[in-house]
Length: 130
Image: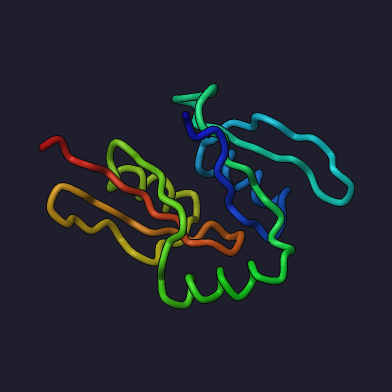
């Protein structure tokens, strides 16, 4: 058994596609029209046949209060692994990305938290070899 898809609820699929590809560096994988929305997925360029992130429309009534509560408490719902959190934070900051938590080292893990401009906080994490 493998993980094939994971979802991130987004306010605007087109805006999310631009952020996740142009800023974060993911690659578009699927873009299928489905009425007013799209089946829209992106993948890591390091694993183009790996896990797909579905940029899921956030229209369900439960999504808004759930995401608002997480953001209000500063809790990221998704995490992406990077080789160097400090370098990635510098790169993203130069592109205008706002961080709600600057890089912070806690034992073997360094994390930072960014605002994805689509209603979510995303954690970047680096795990040091131990």
